Image 1 (cartoon, rainbow, N blue to C red):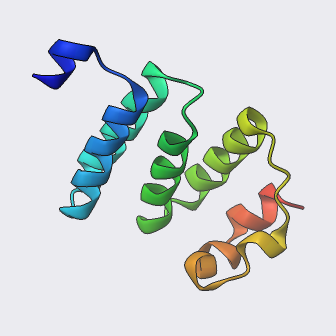
Image 2 (image 1 turned 30 degrees about the vertical axis):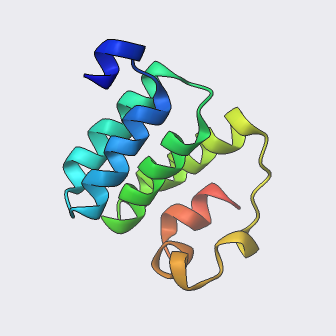
Image 3 (image 1 turned 30 degrees about the horizontal axis):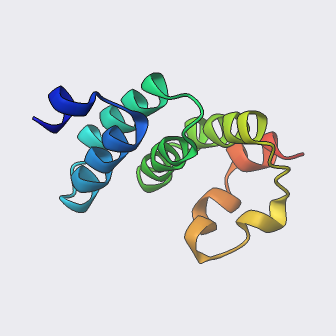
Length: 102
């Protein structure tokens, strides 16, 4: 009803994505995050939510591509040191990471 009343936007879709993530439904999380990005391409949180799905599913090639999108769209300048931590451990060691940030 809320969407019918005020219209849809990236934040609402990303809220749905986060609720799905909390419920452990990564497929639904991905769908909502992509919808958030489609509806409001300047809403950064949707991009990070999708990156989280890729990280959690160890889809490292897609994660690298998503991080590149985030870099391009939002002006980040990532370095390998940004990912040398427990959250990104497996990604940090992956070929996808090495190929992306050579």
